[in-house]
Length: 165
Ligand SMILES: NC(=O)c1ccc[n+]([C@@H]2O[C@H](COP(=O)([O-])OP(=O)(O)OC[C@H]3O[C@@H](n4cnc5c(N)ncnc54)[C@H](OP(=O)(O)O)[C@@H]3O)[C@@H](O)[C@H]2O)c1
Image (tube, rainbow, N blue to C red):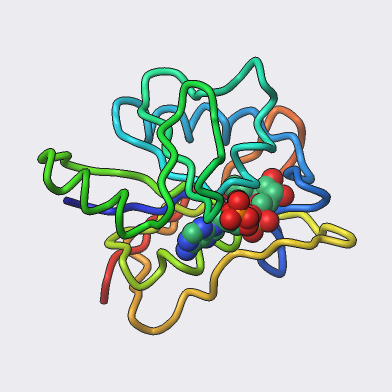
């Protein structure tokens, strides 16, 4: 199975603040949907809770929530106690691709297991960010830097794709 990770980051690697994403970038939401639709998405418990109740589970994708709380219930989602358990089950089922969709803690845990990173790089300075993307080390190669785009909101951004070097 191919394991991808997908996130959006502002300058300095900021991905979250106060349990939310500190920007509005509709083109990124559309891109996220296009990339992940039809594949399972795996997220940390705090990212699940950051989704407004009316938007979860994300449609057209099996939603998997990772938590160490054995009693945790997430309506409409699969709950697992470890990333390795979730990935092992998908491999057994013959799933082709699954996506890690955050947040910061889960990205860090999944980084050594991932085959591909899809990163939206946003030209924005975020004050008081509290969650950051995992460092992308020399074991990764930028396969596609993507064109420089401008959102209808005025924000500059690009879609990058990284693969193992
Ligand atoms: N910019 C982006 O692309 C993007 C994407 C997603 C999220 N975000 C932002 O990121 C922030 C949330 O990230 P976060 O780092 O605070 O939390 P998170 O990674 O979403 O969730 C953390 C929780 O998930 C569980 N967990 C994580 N790793 C685990 C592991 N290896 N094994 C078992 N359980 C594990 C634990 O749950 P328990 O405490 O229940 O045990 C942990 O407290 C929010 O601000 C959100 O908006 C940004």
